Image (cartoon, rainbow, N blue to C red; front, top):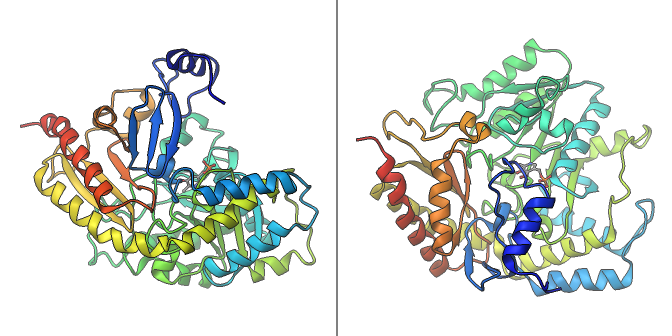
Length: 448
Ligand SMILES: Cc1ncc(COP(=O)(O)O)c(C=O)c1O
């Protein structure tokens, strides 16, 4: 419903009365957005922006897909709500479709209304089934904002909750990061020491219930593991009877050129969590999918978990439409095909900019990492800068791009390029051109 207020008034009221997430509140001037369609959104003055990160890496189908909107409308008219204890058409139909697209073997589903809650469900399920407590997560990771999921988050969004934030039972392993290895090793001579170290942790801890990973780390830098990593992690988990939880909240739904990132290595986790792209983010929905062994445990044990909004019909209907639209438009193949095109453009960009340390990714999921020095790989900003409110170079570059009509998500010292999967080559070219121009700011900041 259009407002009678001016854009300035709407921005001011939003900032005065509502919290801006993950930021200092002073100085927050949220852009007033009035419309969005395809790969673009529009502000209150009518200016259009190319959405080069699908907002929070979630609008995979692009904005305002008519089939998804129609599914929401139809469901609202048909059955807007019924409690989670009932069977519904949409719950049955979505389950059938999930069996088709998820890694084989994931056969029982718990629906939530966010990625955070999907991970909370996964932790509780892992602990109930194994009778064990500890979750091994990794430092460069984000798993959600509530007490359990933030405790399992390796990145600085956890720090404000310390010391109580690290609930008993979460321990951190080194991440897989072949550009800046936390163990100071080099692939492939390293023998994937970062995954072997997880086995060392399991052997030297007791009571490990699960290992939790983002198959391709998202916000923390689109870290793609080498091909041996997940087959070996699967072996380690099996050998020690530890569950493998894949957090595909961001990496799922075609983003990497496969339905789910784990498909790139043909490894099936015991539990897969996801959200975001499941409805192209039009409606809040999360999913915790478990294998048959876990499912059958609860045949004779109390499933001690639930929400009022679990399997909410209005959240499930658009997920059905999203999967059908992804199939109709062949978006998974499209991400796989456009990936090498985007990669070539980014490699070319790196060649021309001394502020770029590395470009890396898969499908339509890429990071551009900025450095002060390409040899030492010293970043312009650190996690500590982020939480202390220091000005970040990536924010300056992103602001320049916004001026030029392109939205790009920035985090600490890198950008995340993750456009809607419907993007065209011409639109990719336009986004890259804007980044190319804005990177002048970063190049000038490189010490001589
Ligand atoms: C990998 C990952 N896990 C979990 C979450 C939390 O999801 P939500 O914001 O829907 O609670 C996010 C959000 O960005 C994420 O990227």
